[in-house]
Image (cartoon, rainbow, N blue to C red; front, top):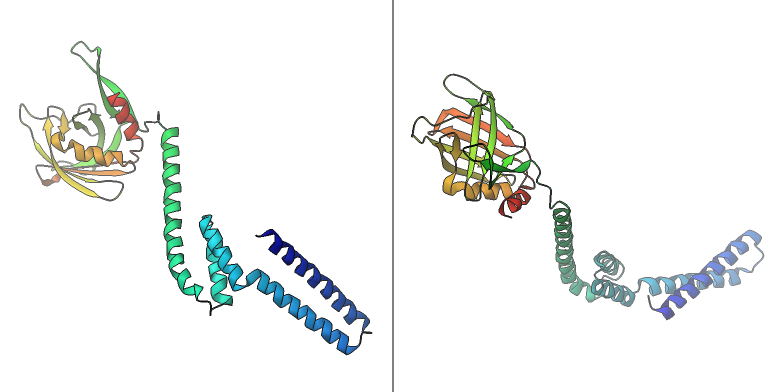
Amino acid sequence: MDYNLKCINNKFFGILVILMIILGFVLQVGCVPQSEYDDLLAENEELKARLEECMHGAEKLIANAEKAYKEKKYEIARNNIKLLHEKHPESPKNEDFKQLLKTIEIKEMEEIKRKEEEEKERIRIANLNNTGMWGIRYFVDDFGEKTDEKYISNEYLINGSFSNSATQNSKLTVRFVITREDISILLYEYAGDNPVKAIGYNRDKYYVHIKDSNNEKLSMNAELKQDRLSFNKNSKEVHSAFMKGGSIMFKIEKNHDPINVYHFTIENADWYENAYRKLNN
């Protein structure tokens, strides 16, 4: 607020308070002539009107709105525009401010988005070493010794269920093996120790349905190689779903047969991107 205008407002307010005190005294004592009382009352009303004009006059509200907008104080700008419309509906500036209100709404949404992105980045930086449910492991050679070749796997087994012609909704546990080039799944029926294996050199075909954390649905082929189900070239799509984090649902059918089916859900894939970054370091 301009200093001189602030002083004027304070002066009007002080005079108004004094007049109200005098009026209260007059009402209590009752010894002032009616004409003087009426004059005092009229002066009080005039000062109240002038104070109202000083605080909520059209020019004042317009100036406040424009100043607040320039300073990106959008809520204050909106309130002054609203007051202008309510107290001075005849002002031609109301029409201009209709468009300004739309602009303010856009600016506020941009500000909200900016703050959300800043918070997201703050959380990301604070969790650079957090890999969530994912861990970095190393393949071993024929002698059981650790090699330099890394892969990502879930730190704990994922629970699910499976059904076929012999059983319904039996226990299933799942482990992922994720390299730079491929994503594979080991399926342990009856939550046992030995994963499902291909018979001989056959590569059984499987059809995989995935629903990611954004409720986007994917469908793709995979094949059982030895003891693991490999996505091959479709690994990129699975990788993209993991990068989104959150809950990811899987339904896997053997040879497009709905009787032979596996169900499981990754409850929270968050921080997969950190594990993948470590894999590539």
